[in-house]
Image (cartoon, rainbow, N blue to C red; front, side, top):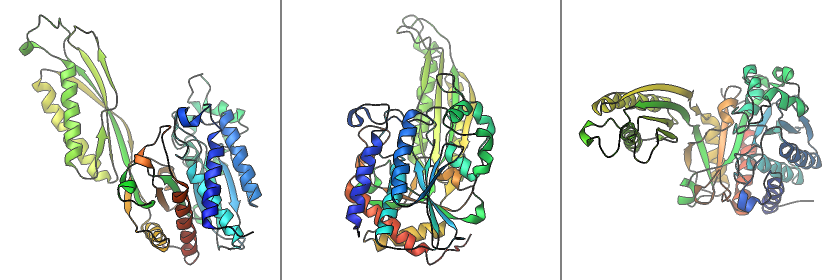
Length: 421
């Protein structure tokens, strides 16, 4: 039976609604979706995905990192593999579309290709990555690191809130953690990795565009500042003599905010603050805060770090405060392959949409997959840019347009199965 792109979009919509019911929550509209790695909810969504893949004639397997992989085989048995997919897991009480949409859209594409009897000179492997968010084990990019061959065995000792290790959870899920190295793809067998994802930002909506092309995934770094002052009675210590750690924290917040507002392609946040003694009538003695900086250009982020540390080193002593600083995390930015970005732009044009190129301010599985192969990414508009929240929303019409872009992308890739590296 021949189906239209509109019908494929509607099919994707129904699949997304069904997947949203695989959740710890009872009402996804009000409570969002909570689906963590190696849980009954994870098993439930993999069973649904497997059944849909098998109905499309795909071969289906699971690996030892709890990833699900379905293959739409080429007529050429020795063809390369176009990897497509995203993560099945969510943040607590997250939205219906973050991650899972990037698995469902390629499935709808396969449905359309089969109905149109379109053959491609490459295999398409659709991956439901097990854990990108890191909610349960703080093990971000678990699934994609397994496929890329960069999984760190030391992370198997990480535990969840119940003291269950990642290694034990994987075993309980039917995996053999010791066999994870066998699950990596060989670089020479892979054409590229392509991920569709909701934008998680407002730019496409502001531009009235259903889709956009990503040219880079942000680099991220995190810092902790512990600011030391002196506690005292809030009513008796003169203002000029105070060593108020929270005032110092406010100055750091101001510096971060100003730096990010004055620097193109840089965003940042002070996301967490703890204050002690935290009494209503006590001058704060110790304030601890976190700073996160993000940019698609590592040089911009690193220069911002240098500037911020220099500014803090002058500002806090001027307030008669001392402090310690620790950098707690750094993830380099990843550039999408220019040839694949260009292919996606052309496919967007083929679909009757003006191409808009933007960078991703959020991390994605492509950060790990870039260690294996060239990556590309397509954003789909989401309402008001809301994500990680029950109000996360997209439209069936935008799903259809994204499927159309993926179709034209595959058609163009079919003409260049050996792209430049």
